[in-house]
Length: 420
Image: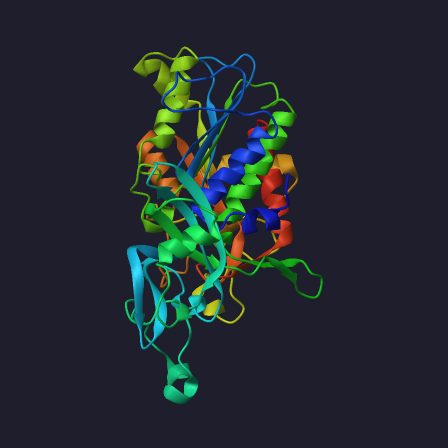
């Protein structure tokens, strides 16, 4: 498998991330499933990509209606800017690309960095293409001479202040024609899902070079460990002495609420589980409900590390530190799905992996986010917990994490898949 840093750089959009997971799994023998074909739940690995989501399931020998599902859920998307349907615009002789804000990025972090456009486009012949333009756009800051009070706080107007530039003078081609040229696409682009992303590759830094600066750690810091853990489990024959079906569910659109056909609130994971259960002989609602009762889900999404410059924003005893292992995420309002019962499952996996673990509970005066965990638990009725690698600068164009936390998370998820 490629390295985590290479995976990040090769995954500038959710569509690329899903495809990279597919490539990693097919390399170890997974077969691709077309949703329009009869369902394959034969022994072995199977993978299905729908847009920016990817679902994979490994069926061990002996799996049947008395099996359960061991699910690791994550999401492939990250906040940023998304190209508008008609992107051509400009002011004062500058050629610009109209964008809208996707999710909740730290807006100031998007400025003064070279951006690539990446995602999927469809041409007039109906073909779908994954594209990555390389450095194309930049959102320039206003010089401090023209706004001397900028360092005392500035409120960005997303319509006026976040419009990236890509050239000067009269355009010789449209933005989409530029995309097609840079991506070597013949034909007219008639529809697209393109996002901006940082062009800088991930970097190791720090006194021991043990810290990672990279874009999209939220949430590729979960997608990659889950993929790595699943491939390792497959090489080792699946769950140790068990007939549980191992599932990886990497959804899209989490950053905007998961309400999409490829989001956690949509039918995609439910359909995978239902069709797999049916193919394994659990043909009635009672049989499938019993399979779900034997199942569990680890919802994996980045957590907030205690920030050294803003420690007051964290609970003094429930704040995780980068480098000390992934964090179990807990919230009394069920913004995270963890409860005492599911927490035991997590501690069992950590113990089996011989790995450290922490807990994250928000300070009472600071609201926490949410993720796919509560949605999955509510939709499927499966015991679910929320965990994640502690990171800093969450939702910035570049985030940071401790390298050893990625490795630790992979080992814990591997222990879970192996039957812990």
